[in-house]
Image (cartoon, rainbow, N blue to C red; front, side):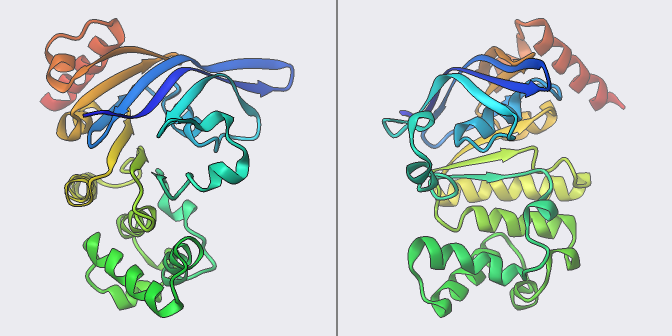
Length: 264
């Protein structure tokens, strides 16, 4: 598998009043075509900031200090906003922790799903609606007509996450970045969403960068794992290497916690 995305020596800083905090310290990682790469680590380790920096959707007080993000031969960090907007959401899409917060509460699910087909692909309203309904069926939503006419607050958390996954796939992205997408869900719905992502990846063929603090999730879906600690990638390897022969002390702590939880 060839390299699809390369993050090179990425450094991100947060500016808080008179203080400057380095949240990401020289991260290097590679996402290969067709693979599932899990970026694992405790809260605050820099996982989400690394992912958001890929398409420069960082908080207003954060700045990329140095580094490159190479995608299809271009450094995304050097593109102007107009050029980057053609990549963001279209070729590289995101799924976030709280789908209810990411979905607009004043528009129906149908209106929000239809929009990318009209704006980015030039579909007619009728074509866009048919495409949107197909996507909802693809993410295994049964009552498509009802969901299309519903507002986000009328749906469960798991249903909203399925809707948001459908939205992220509307432009057929090459990379899907899933940032703790099951954290707010109960374990039963979590298992369903993970299974759905694995099935969609096989069917559609995107590369998946999955961010989590939970090694149980990593073990279920990952081909390869990068472990982050205090803003740096401290270990990288295949899933069995990470579990059977962890080298960094933080990786060993994560594996130990996973094993203890498994015995409860």
